[in-house]
Image 1 (cartoon, one colour):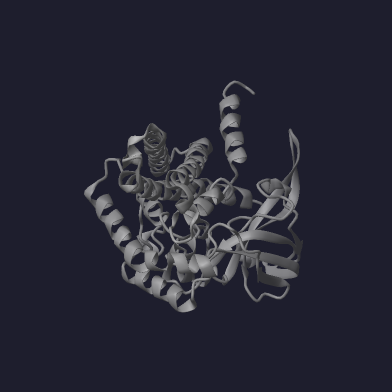
Image 2: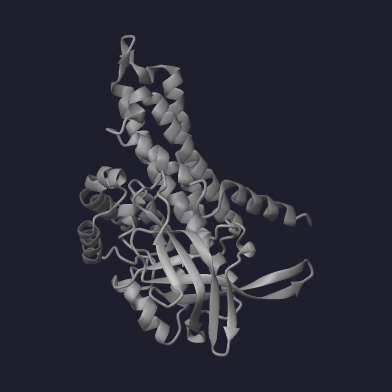
Length: 386
């Protein structure tokens, strides 16, 4: 990474690189082919991550986490982004929303996620709503000291069956100058709760070993003690998580880009056509140059957003800009790398077609490119009263 790093940051990147090369990379082709991470392998990755102090790096040291700042977390995600989410998902980074746990919730949900004894999923996306969070139909209706939940969630990502869901559901409406607005509340819902069903979602062409789950709530009753944060304040909780999630997608995209560039440059230097390496032809060399420019710009945007987050001044548009540019740049890099390799780039013997497929997802999850452009343009127009 062509960015000034402290000695501590360089040591962190080197530790994660070694871990990735030794514990993850040898298995990436096989888990992509089968669409599964064997249980024994997942347990091994988690155990090694715990031993190396890489588990829960995003949560404070005071509760057993790694206590990394946002710039270090961006470097963490960047290095791991070079391989399958299905594998590095076992180096769990619990949702920071769990820091909203209070009272008994801390021992029941937060701390077990730090020690690796439990795994959560972030249940927000719905079949009929997609990126339009405020169109969610899942409803939690108060009944005394309980809530009755009905609805469905899909595209809920996790490498393994979760132990509980951080669920967001509408719990009422309020009137605003722009009309009626839904009130949303976060809940902690345990797997096995009557009326709560979890099943595997359809297989995706990208990140094949990183599963999606479908959650169904049919008259599922939870006590009000399961509210995460404050009643009707779930949207603020979700928005905070989504903003940083976009930065992490962008950071991982930078890692994939770096790997693609290394593959493309090595091939361009070694592959001979018409008596010389193909890297000497402008049709190839200019592709490499454009990829290098994209990576440099994406890295700077990611680190700028992370630096602002560390200083408490990151805006929604900062995360959106980083995510938009990096996710689209890695798509360009994957396509150019295949073009440089020619037909070999699409063969399963090489990792390029897998990186190409995986990169396509980056423009969709954690908010599509269109959503990011909406966030960016809305912020720009707001300054002029638009």
